[in-house]
Length: 438
Image 1 (cartoon, rainbow, N blue to C red):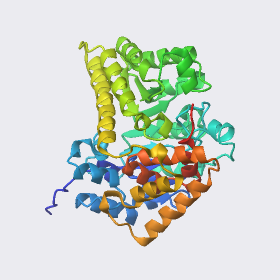
Image 2 (image 1 turned 90 degrees about the vertical axis):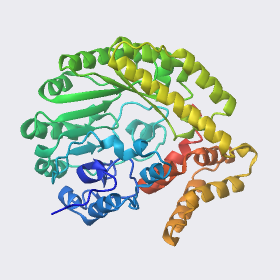
Image 3 (image 1 turned 135 degrees about the horizontal axis):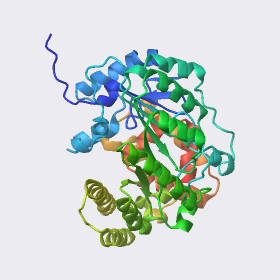
């Protein structure tokens, strides 16, 4: 039978599952509006064989992208196909498998740190100490682990994030299954680098781990302010262990760095550290919370930041890692320049001078009237009800105004994703955090 080649090839929709702390199961990190199912109400098999996933694949193949794929659809419309989210899943070599090839696990929020740009959604310590709220209870249990037995033999990639994944007891149970069913599986762990003990070392030796560590500065004061509860010297000691472990397996350690207004001056030193130690640097900018976003910086400040970053990087080319690190760093500079350009083209001026009611109107118009589309009545009602809950969550006018401005300055596709994917209580905390000032 002749099968028509799909217009766009999204391997995430066809061969990947993403498990969220709430129990929601998605296809990828970029489609937050299409929940394929919820555990434990739905089993993994039911979700994999379900109608929602089939509709998603059909929508992508036809080029419509109308099943929650807003950010990728926007990238295509703007001629940025190569930058669309689905390209991030090109690592999947599916070979027409009838089973998922990649699974991404984000099963809980257990974490020992209280990073300033994080929230209780991803940190149990923040949930307890900063948000002062009841803990989130993960729905994943031993039955979930047992259901994975059917899929683990077919996996080629399994990613584990948190929270702090090395503190998740359920991950060790999953890794025990992998030891038996697929010991050569490529396992990817994204950790804050503060947790390392003999138990972890044993699992590292028994399985095929790839490690990414989050570090945002090598300045002790700044690092420990950003990554609250961490100690720089201990983290760097662990970095050395993980780096040696991976080098012995002919792999490279990754360091993920969030470039924010609070640490951009420290980034050139971090690049030098990674270059000198054969470490891949993965820098990223932040949209939310607003205080950690360059969207909140004024034009003069952005110009000074770009100038400093350009002069801070040493553009030596000696090996692939250094070349890649320099290229990624240049992409960050380009992103900040893009923010500057957008702020010049979009009238976000004088937001501080506007009343709270005027800001509410701007946010509502941006969310509901994005891209000149008209959402259905049910969607409009949902947005308005959600916005009202956000507004009522902050009593102090100055903080409410700050949060409103932060959400207004966020790209519309980010806002739509936030409203689509989060439980309202988590969205409220994200909104409240936008008024924070660390």
